[in-house]
Length: 153
Image (cartoon, rainbow, N blue to C red):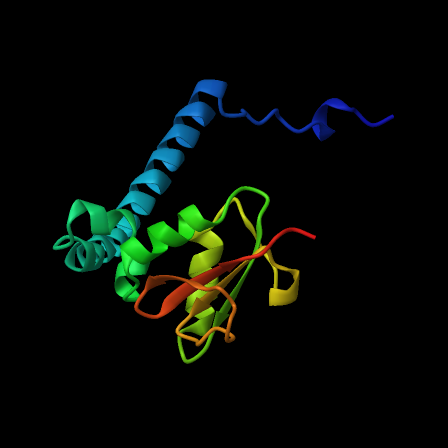
């Protein structure tokens, strides 16, 4: 019979747990440092861009920069916000290049009212830059804005 002793390989030594933990901590630290440096390279120029755009604005305008940059009159939108209430259904009738921006901005500023696509289904119809129908009883809120409130059906 052949001897078994000669065929057994010597045991290889595994790294200790503390060595593995140290290596893992070092790798994680290096990855975090690389990520922070890369983020710094990307974020700082973006912050400079934001500061250039928003820095000169007053605090009130910084609270609502979308309305400012779109040229919306805050007083008109405040009046529009007061003209609709929770549970009201409203529609915005607008024309021109900014009609989608007006509708999207209304969806934000007129919350918690619910926007509907068809004026026939609305409790409140906002005419923005559009002549309302004759004898609609439209209440003027600004140079190009008026509101019609209808009784709920």
